[in-house]
Structures are given as C-alpha cells and as structure tokens.
Figure 1: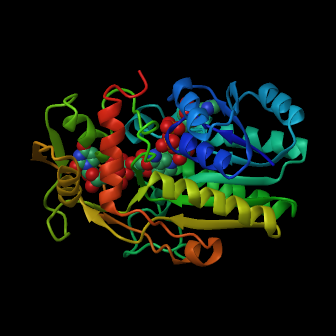
Figure 2: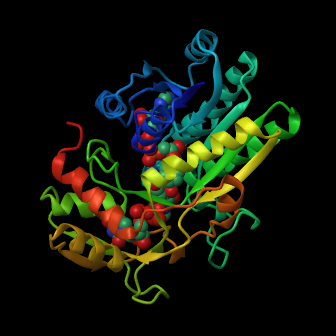
Length: 338
Ligand code: NAD
Ligand code: UD1
C-alpha cells in the first residue's frame, strides 16, 4: 500500500515516514522544504534500509497534486504540511490561513478528483481553547484558540467534518496532538527548528549543547504545584505509531470523521522537564524566570482513553526516554541537519 505523506520531511512527518516504511508501506513525501531539509529523508531511508519517493512541491499547487495522485495508487494521505509558529501566525495571519486552510482545501479537492478518500490530519490540542478543566477529552466542545495558528487548525477540523458529512466515501482522522518531543532512538532524526526555538524542549536542548546561554521560563505564578506551566509531553515515536494505528482504523472501518487525542494523560511542569533533562544528560541548564508568555495556558493535558480504546494505541515512552532521546539527537547533531 502506498501512502502520500505531505510535510513528510518535517519533524513529525519524518518520524512517521520511518514508521510507515518499517511497517511495509510504500511512502511518497510531498514537501516544499519551507521548514525542513532533504537530509531528514536521506536518514529515514538509511534507517529503514528502504527508499521512499520525495517530491519537492507545495500542497497549494493543484497541478503538482493532480500529477502525483494520478501517478500513484494512494490508499491514504497523511497530511502534516503546514506552518506552526504561533508568534509568526499573529504577524502573518494570511500566510497561515493560506497554507493551513486553503492548502488543505486544495489537497482535499485533488484527493476527491482522484478518488482517494482516506485522510489523517495533524490537529492540535490548541483547538480546545482554555476554558475547560483538565484532562481534555474529545467530547468537550472546541473552544476559542488564542491565535491564527490555532484558529487555522480549528477551521480545518470543521472543513473536514463537513466533507465527511457530504460524501460517505470519506474517512477522516483528526488527530489532536499534545506536546510532541523527543527523537528517534538512533539519534539520526529529530527536531531541527530554524532560528530561535519557540518550544521548550528544542530550547533546552540548544542550551545544553551550547548554542544558547540561558532558558527563559515563562511564568512561575500559575496555579500549578510549582507555579510553572504544565503540559502533556508525548514522544514523537509514540505519536508516529499513533498515526499508523489511525491509518489502520481508517483503512478497515466505515466512513466517519474521527477525532482522537494523542497524548500520554500525564502533565509535567517546566521545572520538572528541566530537572528530567538535567538528569538524562548530566548537563546543568541555566534558566531565569520571566513573565508569562502571552497566549499561554496554565495547564494542558489529555484524556487519552478514546485513542487507547478505539486505536488500540497507548503512548509507551516515559519522560526520561523523551529527554534521553532528545539529548542523543542534539548531541550528535549540534547544528541539526546542517
Ligand atoms: P514541521 O514544520 O517540522 O513540518 C511541517 C512540514 O510541512 C515541513 O517539512 C514544511 O517544509 C512542510 N510544509 C509547510 N508548508 C507546506 C506547503 N504549503 N506545502 C508542502 N509542504 C509544506 O512541523 P511538525 O512539528 O512536524 O508538525 C507537523 C504538523 O503537525 C503541522 O501541521 C503542525 O501544525 C502539526 N502540529 C505540530 C505540533 C508540534 O508541537 N510540533 C503540535 C500540534 C500540531
Ligand atoms: C505551543 C503553542 C501551541 C502549539 C505547540 C506546538 C503557544 C501559546 N502554544 O504549545 O499552539 O501547538 O506549541 O508547536 O505558543 N516555555 C518556557 N520557555 C520557553 C518555551 C516554553 O518556559 O522558552 C514554557 C511555556 O510557557 C509552556 C511550556 O514551556 O508552559 C511548553 O511550551 P511550548 O513547548 O512552547 O508548547 P505550548 O506552549 O504548550
């Protein structure tokens, strides 16, 4: 079976492409390399000891999509391609709506024209907004995301729901990721943000390897046990395996628009993450407390029981493994893929 993976050269896409190859699928990656390098896929091929097909192109380009969808007999599409920097989405909202919303609409139009009706979509816990008590379960109404990035994810979720209702041939999985971290255990592929990292773990790892001086901890006055923000960190390989389970479910079940949380169900504070990283790496992370980052919530963690039951999937890797694997990747690749 052949799977089209949009955005497959990126962080989560490359780990999922590896899991797909190892499970015996053929993989075609479409990526415009806006936030990735071709090197990630060279390493995926080396690890899998199998080749994949890479096409440099854009999901907004209907011509490229039509050609690809005609050339290959795809069983499904896993759709990672999109922009994800929250701050940038505030200053460039049109770019985010064009890439994330219009790009997905164009992809779905091309899939429909080619008769491919199975789609796995990368959504985010951000669609819950900040009005619910923890843990977050799929039965809760979606909330009001605080930025254009989050709104673009919510808009796409709604587009996909309408699509599945409009035509019973569609089977769609909307996967709400919590906080993906870590790297493949080989240390060969991992997260390689361009510029100053926005997210906690890449920043910590770059401090540890000497690329940054000091971590800013955004807020120590939240209503949490130690005052710092609490999140549900999930190992990227657990996430990748969750995609294979979702794919399997789509391939074997009737038409529907499914929503599954992919998280561990366990929250950790910023200070707990720093401590776990220090223990895993043996490196001290200098940090200073700063004021809260606009748009941050105090706590965010999942109820993962629906995915456990319906996908027969459960995140297996603990916080220590997430830190060990992050550090192995960063230590072996201090400048990422460059
Ligand atoms: P990433 O930036 O590493 O990967 C996205 C990939 O899409 C990149 O390789 C980029 O070059 C490509 N891309 C962007 N726009 C494109 C376009 N128009 N056409 C073709 N390719 C394009 O990000 P990631 O962390 O791997 O995230 C993958 C998906 O998961 C994204 O949709 C993201 O919004 C979503 N997500 C990520 C997180 C997270 O914390 N990493 C959390 C929730 C949801
Ligand atoms: C952020 C985005 C979310 C997106 C996710 C993955 C916001 C408000 N939310 O989630 O929409 O889906 O990234 O891209 O930006 N922290 C520090 N110092 C840092 C970085 C982070 O203290 O340098 C803290 C944050 O305040 C938070 C925790 O670490 O408490 C995790 O932050 P981060 O990794 O950015 O993820 P989220 O904010 O959960």
